[in-house]
Image (cartoon, rainbow, N blue to C red; front, side):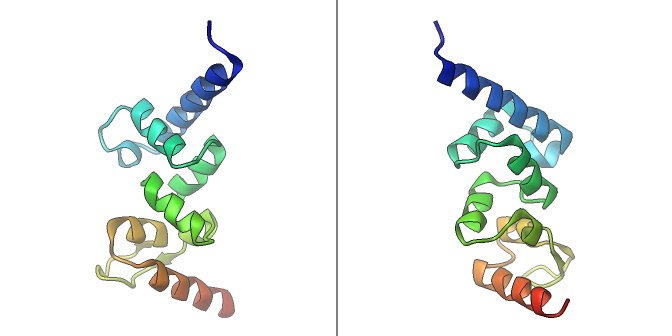
Length: 118
């Protein structure tokens, strides 16, 4: 017999899996959505809406989302588009940090500049 905790966790996995599927292949890199949902749970994300916000910022890596979140970044800030970083293509801060094109310090500088120049 499953306890309430197991049932809640299975429901959370299901909801996160649905969010991943809505974001397409980039969100789960051809792995089963359920396995990637477990990665998000393991990274401390237990709210499908929050996972959706990080994925909308093109931050497809739960580890990177955790790193950004721990550094005080929000998904909204991670969604700021930039051409800065090692690769000059334009993409979101979240995507560029996950890809290794931007460091956390560089991302913080971009976000601070964006805040003060609005």
